[in-house]
Length: 312
Image (cartoon, rainbow, N blue to C red; front, top):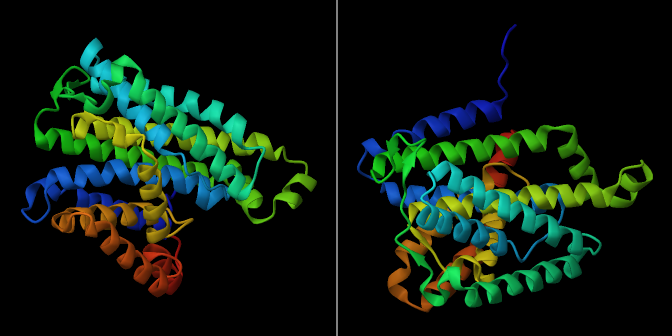
């Protein structure tokens, strides 16, 4: 049986192969790339909802922050291994996503977005009040632990490859979801919801599943971030973090698999280089975003894919 790889598969393998070489070169810091992986997963989770189901959520930081807090807490207080800590964070984010989705999916457009934002603000309020989050101090000094009880992730190189493995797993999971019959139904709902209903699909059920999967993936990104930076803080559940995910998705290219990854890399890079500008960094980021949107209406990756006539 001959294995046939699509252009997207080939490109993905090459990119991931190049990423494995990062620790052995001196141009890009490991920590920077690990942070990109975390937010790339977060942005990709939103893109699964926005780009393939047509649902814009302004409250995705609730799931990102929940994953970060739960992973940090169980790692620090219960002494779990990192893979178990991530699983706990993902399960809690998935459960929260199911509850939020059940409340929000019956509305569409701006009403759906505002409901998700309002629910996320409830999570932010709870994060400031419940004892285990430590309020404004957050959960600091999160131990990275030993992967499978064997590999010490306090080593930057070991942690890098662990983060890369988690990112790769998340990427190909999203690719599999999008390519499956379920993914095709999501696209049908995005393009023409009344027609999908007329064909007999339970649209609300598909939306709820998509929302729940997206929430779980966002929690994975948040949990990984708490391990990489060894910190879970209120900024993880703040509405501004949701806005960053939307920005990354649009900038990279809505509905493309590599778009959120490129968007995350660009935004985090801008944050690092423009940090010295203080409050002006937000204005500079906004101006660059406007220029990119005007120059690349399909997003950076979306424009490249359109020019090359391939799916990215």
